[in-house]
Image (cartoon, rainbow, N blue to C red; front, side, top):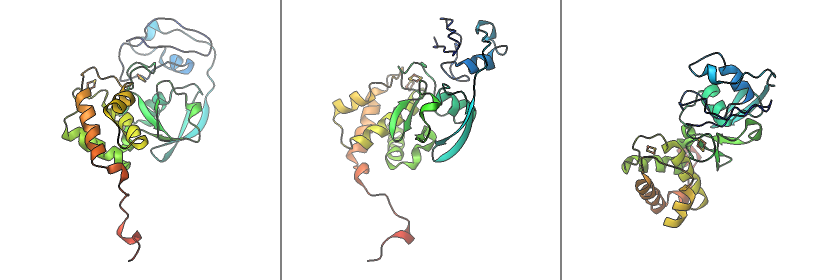
Length: 223
Ligand code: FES
Ligand code: FES
C-alpha cells in the first residue's frame, strides 16, 4: 500500500515505505521518519532527514479524557491516538482521506484522522470508536451491527460506525439515498454495504435519536 510521506524539510521520496498498516501510522512526518529510521524491515527505504522536528506538548481531549501529547504540529491525529495514547480501535487504511477507516468525531463531526494534524484539534472534543458506547445512537448502532451480522473481516467497521453515528445525529430519519450519500466515503472491501444500510435503517426506525436520555433515579423530578 502506498503511503504519502511528508517531511517539513521537503523530502518526498515518492515511493511506498510501509506495506503493512497496523503497526505504524500513516503519513510519516519528519519526526516519524526519524523515529523509524534505523529500525524495522523498512529502515533502509526511509529517507534520512537531518532537520530536527520541533515537538510541542499539548492536551487533547479523547473520549472525555484530557491526554498530554508531545508531538510535532503536523503529526496526524490517528498516529497520536493509536501509537501514543494506545487506542487502536481506529484503523489505518489509505492514509490519504480516501477510505474512511480512520474516521473519528471532532465535536461530533466525522473527520479523517489520518490527514488531520493534531494542531487542528486543540480545544476540540475527539471521539473514537472506544468512546462510542457513551453515545445512545452509537450504542444502538453497535447493537444493530451485531444483530444484522454486519462485519465480515471487520477492518473498516470502526469507521463505518463513526460515520453512521454522525449521520443519525444530523438526520435521525435518513432516506436510502441519504444513507448512501453519508456513507459513500467509507469503503468496505468485503462489500457489507447492504447490511450496513439495513442496520442504520433499523436504528432510524427505532427512533432512538428522538428518545430522551434516561436519567438516574435520584435525578428524576418528583411528580
Ligand atoms: S486511513 Fe484515513 S481515510 Fe483511509
Ligand atoms: S468488513 Fe472487511 S473491509 Fe469492511
